[in-house]
Amino acid sequence: MSVPLRRLRQVPRHLLVCEKSHARHAGSRHAAHVRDHAYNCRVSFLIPECGILPEVLKSTIAGVGEYYLVRNLSVHELVAHEFIDTFVKKGSCYALTYNTKIDQDNTAALLPTGKLILSVDKDTYEELGLQGHPSQYSGKKVMRYIITIDLTDSSFHPDSKEHKRVLWALKEKKPLEFDFLLAWYNTGAEGSTLMSYFPKNQIQALKPKITFSTLRDLQCPVLQSNELQGKPEESCSTEELFEWLGAVLNQVSLDNKSFSFLSTYCCPQPNTIVEQAFLCTITGFIIPETIIQLLEKLCCYFDEPKLAHWLTLTVHGFADSPVSWRESEHGFHKGGENLYNFVVFRNLDYWLQMAVGTNDDCPP
Image (cartoon, rainbow, N blue to C red; front, side, top):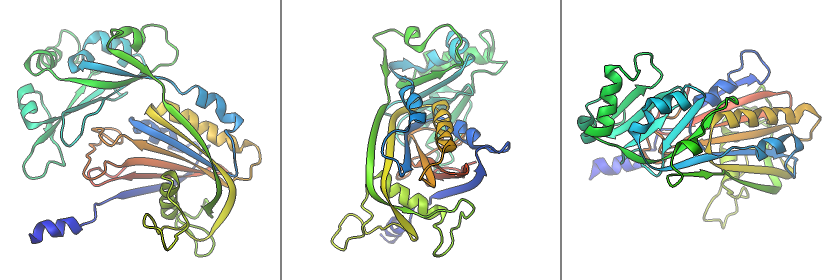
């Protein structure tokens, strides 16, 4: 019993990577980091000293695009050249299996780069007969494999042996069928849409859920853009801000009341009380292009003088996505955390905080 008990006492490893830059600096990587995180289920922004949705953000929030739920979609349909030519090569196409568990089920994801990622159990891997590699989170006895298929590779054309072999494996040898979340972003090119491509009884258009709230008398940490580590009695650190923000977004009390059985957390010092703070949360299948637009408008919020010294934009990834950043394998372990947060200051300096759980590589 001593070994299992020892493992229960072990705290799961978490990583928080922070970097600082300026939103208008030529070398800033803020847009690249957003693009690298393809699968996002929740986006929240918090603006202190603000009570309503700012005018500069209204059109962006109103324009948050639809995404689609496609039922019983066979994976081989994603490798069909009609689909590749229509969507994968003419924009950014995102697909992610819906209601699958990354540590228990077979899952699939199509990245906007054209890479199709399959995370499958050992039996499925052996039946498919496609080349892959063991999951790095399988442990000593490999029970899960990762298969990557580049749909845009020049050798992956309809008459190639590779394409015929992949299509045969997915269509006849071991058919895989899932419910998928899909989204497609293109730059205005005319042609087919996802809604017209799939049968009407198979595809459903969904709108992200958007909620607004105004927080009253909120304790906020004092931050200085050039002090990521904070200064005693002058400013809070990036780690303290990250923890505080998690409490605020999850509606945890910051009062540290002695009779509270839920939380004894309190706002880090030094802090200030703001009369009001505006919180907007978007929930759904949210593509990076939407987040980049939103981040740009949040930067424009400071074009005119504001009472707020800073604001935040927090993005949560899907816990059961097979990848987190780029093509880095993602596992669930105990929570499946993969998220990032921007703190944008008045002068457009920003902090970028990227966090993952145990079964993830270090964010880029």
